[in-house]
Image (cartoon, rainbow, N blue to C red):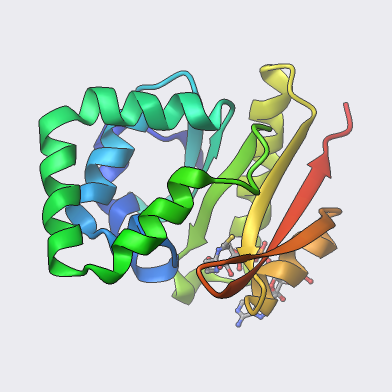
Length: 191
Ligand SMILES: CC(C)(COP(=O)(O)OP(=O)(O)OC[C@H]1O[C@@H](n2cnc3c(N)ncnc32)[C@H](O)[C@@H]1OP(=O)(O)O)[C@@H](O)C(=O)NCCC(=O)NCCS
């Protein structure tokens, strides 16, 4: 069963995010990731779904319709709690400061809607959960009258790249982010 992502799912989504997704948000640690999902699940600038079976969340997908707006909202609504968690994470791991600055510059990211995060419990992969989440996400975009979105994926994440390519996502360009090769894909959603 696929349900809308709500604040009550934040804790388990955090676990999946930190276990399976790379990137600055995960590197900042579970406190920051939890605040992020608590705020965004109540925002209109983003939306997500969870895949639930026997009461367990086995996977999730999260998308933004207004990327810069969503992050401004996270900073505004996460306020002191978020800023202090980020501050302590950067203090513990100064390497992340460079990554954070590169993200703030955000040169390569168009302001188009995007699939920001998707992950499925590794024990449950290959059963079609990822595909079902993408289908529901596309329905969610259509309902918002959005028919095009993009995503970024690590260049060496061959499983995810094949997963997207098999589902009609098109490689737009490659770029380097903090020394890592990343790929930008897009999908035009049929009506
Ligand atoms: C990408 C991901 C969400 C797909 O989820 P999923 O539930 O396995 O997706 P599906 O079952 O619908 O499809 C999986 C496809 O990968 C293939 N696959 C390749 N290697 C696999 C593996 N080790 N385990 C499971 N499936 C694998 C399956 O055969 C299937 O192929 P198909 O395209 O021919 O149908 C999942 O692999 C994942 O969570 N990866 C880690 C997080 C990640 O990389 N996210 C993307 C970052 S942008």
